[in-house]
Amino acid sequence: MRMYDLIEKKRNGKVLSEEEIQYFINGYTNDEIPDYQVSALLMAIYFQDMAEDERAALTTAMVNSGDTIDLSNINGIKVDKHSTGGVGDTTTLILAPLVASVGVPVAKMSGRGLGHTGGTIDKLESVPGFHVEITSDEFVRLVNKNKVAVIGQTGNLTPADKKLYSLRDVTATVNSIPLIASSIMSKKIASGADAIVLDVKTGAGAFMKEFDDAKSLAEAMVSIGNRVGRQTMAVISDMSQPLGRAVGNALEVKEAVETLKGEGPDDLTELCLTLGSQMVLLAKKAKTIEEARSMLKNNITNGKAFQQFKLFLEAQGGDAGVADRPEQLPQAAHKIELPAKTSGTVSEIIANDIGTAAMMLGAGRATKESKIDLAVGLVLHKKIGDRVKEGESLLTIHANDTNIENVKETLYQSISITSDSVNAPSLIYDMITTK
Image (cartoon, rainbow, N blue to C red; front, side):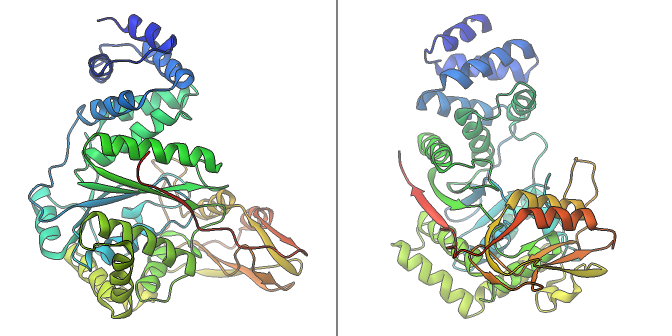
């Protein structure tokens, strides 16, 4: 078998066999196939696409290129959730304890963030003492005992994907549905879950800004998951503006606590109930989506979800008392209001620019080496469709430096106010269960 023949075959629009894809992934992972040939194949895939069997074979080959997580010793159906990312996306912090509170095991492998704010682990480390450095045996024990635990990503999970992504990043082949879908799904499948719920974002703050592209990606990932033996479904949700109101690590933990107590923002609460209901259904803890949703809402109302969050924090060394006293989370030295310059209705909040402003404050990482300030960030007081008066606060800036004129300028440019009436955007656009 020669790499030249694979490149030519895909260039001509033909379907690569499972053996050919395995050959290419193994050879590249083991440094036996050079970058220039893999670059040529990636560009051929970019233009010629891949059939569903090819996508599943590519995903499986990437899964098998490194370690896989064995969760078979955890009782019950393990359901994982993945979001394609956005600004203020606090769902994992809420969903993990909420879904666990109805008896569904949530064995979550998470990473650190590169971008607007930290990842799930960074956010959780806002809680004094909380840590994810636990052994695999302890991870399994905690999930069996408490139904929820979070561990850091292993270093050798899908090494083929890491190599391919680095190459895609410099060869203009990132924006390819089969390559994006196989990259995401390889990590989810290698993480050991039995079923997967995907939250695919669309809008100005999402990777897939157009709905049709988001739907194509969702369908591709659902197809891959189901073809390789994982029950998979996707929710397509809005990211034209930040989700919830908080953007920043400790601020998002506080908002997660409020949501688990039934006091969180409507959009964040609704998305968590939508995703959580699907997780409960796939775990066979409920017979219908309505029953699953009712179970989750009841556990928010009766306090079980909140208590589950405290149990989760305590089991991994965290000070569970911060859930009752959020003021003990890291606090910024300064709270600065951003007043509206005119009266009207908020017509646009560019999510990416809000995220950029939070990163300028120190809430995120521009590079892997950047140090995160867990205390800083933004709390929105107005969302799209809300009325605002001149001088009224649009948001509060939580900063450890008062020299933030560039942050204010970025924020003003990202928020538009009109004299016309504006409707709030839809939150849930579609659900994909099969293709």
